[in-house]
Image 1 (cartoon, rainbow, N blue to C red):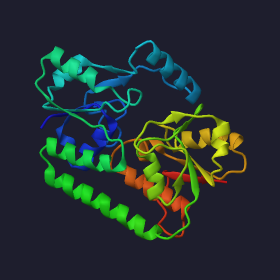
Image 2 (tube, rainbow, N blue to C red):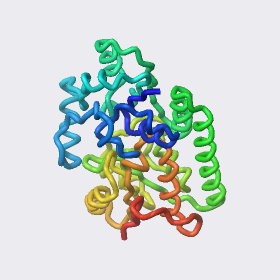
Image 3 (cartoon, rainbow, N blue to C red):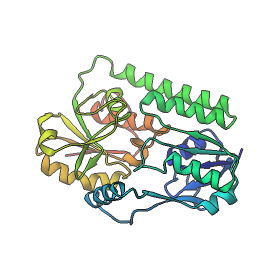
Length: 293
């Protein structure tokens, strides 16, 4: 199977299924496994590099209002890759290339490829998506084994945290302006032994205000800016600290362990669970989450 992954989460799933050698095209964000040096990069960002949260938010809003894409597709490179299976999404036009653009390109290029649209909204949907990718790639047994292992780890977290007090957790998916979390993020907080505040299970993240954030009266704020790693989350937490004085903060590598709908969401839940309940679960490897004093 020749697989073109137009979504970093899908690339991660393909890697976890042991199908790295089947990848023939990826995106500029596909770093797990990092195959960008050895595979054609067919999707790139239309946004300039090196922008801060407020600048990114302003440019994304402006491009959306003008009907401009947030990503570019290298159609020639996709044609030359000649995939038999294309993995794409229609969940978020800000986070990845939309499925409609892919369908138009395949039709224009005359590529007779199967297309699997991966659109999970909840944590259970993510697990279902892993199995769907496995089926489409002819790796049903590997998919069942991977999802079975992830479910066992989730059950172990549930058992370790049973009966414990749940701190009130305000997760922020963006910091300038602040955004309430959506999709699977509230469920991640809940499975990690917290009580999620101001989020919408299975829904979209929504812009809010700092007054509203303070009104939630959280016990802790989880700084998880979409698409950013741990160092950037720590840096952006300084603005949160200024706005939410006196509230304990956690910063997490959101790009790897929160917003990417792949197997590492369970790693993220384990990391958050340890940060909230350090005596209940083992500490995660360095570089995933930081408790800020």
